[in-house]
Length: 259
Ligand SMILES: [Zn+2]
Image (cartoon, rainbow, N blue to C red):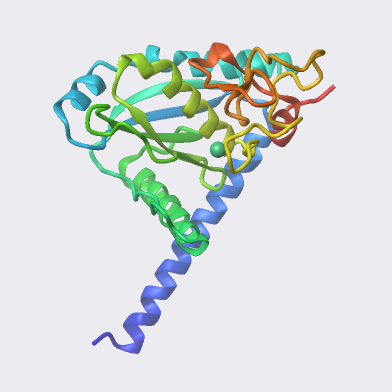
């Protein structure tokens, strides 16, 4: 049985870790909100199903495969008068360690607990591996399409500036994988979801061109709205980031200048 002293020491250590994580996160958040220097975004790939197809796909990945995320965010940020490159994306290769995975149908409390665990994991992982130089770290779980035809939701956390993304290990999905990665990256910068429980983009926040006349069809999806509204009842999934824009509501949440 654990003595009272041992238990107290364990609580103290846990408390110190949480305080260190919180302090670290506060500094990172201040840096992100100012947009006066280029933020370094690092992407790690994870072979989430240990399949050979997934391994082959990951072995073929390079920074160039994620460049469209950098190009998209930088050009959208310039449209909002940020006159430096907002981000720089770098692919950091395969990660053999697997981060804590979110509960599949978790309660609010379970989700909060997972988010704390994931943040503590990322902080500790950064400390012990020396991978602390990037501002944002994104971990992408890749799956073989043949055995995983549908993906669970991805998560981007503002606290900790980290994301856990589920993606297909398939060239045909490279464009839509990058849409999901950019969406979760925007969450880490403070943008919120702009679609309802039936995946319908919310008007006007979740529309790329909310003041277009006529309103339909929209040409692009708003990055946090998720889909392209073609009519009040028809939606289309964006195939790549060229089908996507950052709307004023998301821009404002990320502290991009709105004129
Ligand atoms: Zn989201």
